[in-house]
Length: 221
Image 1: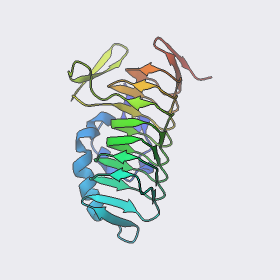
Image 2 (image 1 turned 135 degrees about the horizontal axis):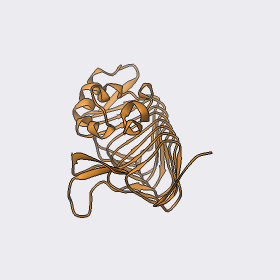
Image 3 (image 1 turned 180 degrees about the vertical axis):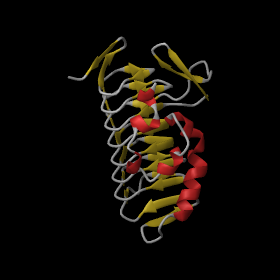
């Protein structure tokens, strides 16, 4: 239970959005608050460091944004981030310092902590990615169940009723997701864990573990 709390998954000093998590216990509780928090935060940003490029779109002057990227607000792109060719930011996105949003990657209602990399053909929706987490090429979050019912997080015999119809994945700090993996709705991956390529993941992967396949999750040595 403690394994999937905000304080045990994230280094909150590694995001401009630290205040988003005030008073919350589990990271998915922040998903419905991203938009309103982002807009208020954007209005307070230092104009010497950030430019308002459109309605509720704030981009750090040191960020590198490809001319082919499509960015919709509300959105904050923090210092030294890279938004590469044909990235599609649909809105409600907070992109951390030094983060990489790559070729044909799509973001929607997300927080990417500092140094996150989603560099090649990723879809990340209704998700939070912790410091230095990385999603390999083609890996995606699936954020709506096929039967459209509310998402439940399963942690062995414990069920967390989230009350959310849209909930992709929560990745703790330093998580590595292998290429072409699918993180199913309600996936929560603890800090310093690895997901093998071509995996279909659901439920909770504890911190410091390797997900090889369903039913085969081993502790790192």
